[in-house]
Length: 72
Figure 1: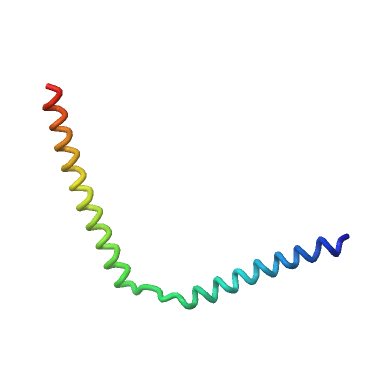
Figure 2 (figure 1 turned 45 degrees about the vertical axis):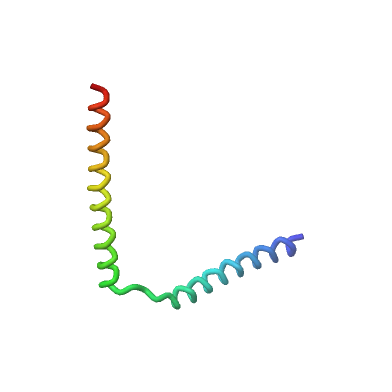
């Protein structure tokens, strides 16, 4: 009975080890972005966030003024 329990555990351990080996092999094939690409992408995201913030702020202000005018 002890032999039956040991085999699945060994199999599970082997599968876990195999998973990490495959993950490491896959990560070695990844083409990582350069520092300049990361900086450029970050700048694009920040600019887009600021533009979206301003646009939503303006839309909010317009709707606030409209609802205030209607409620008078």
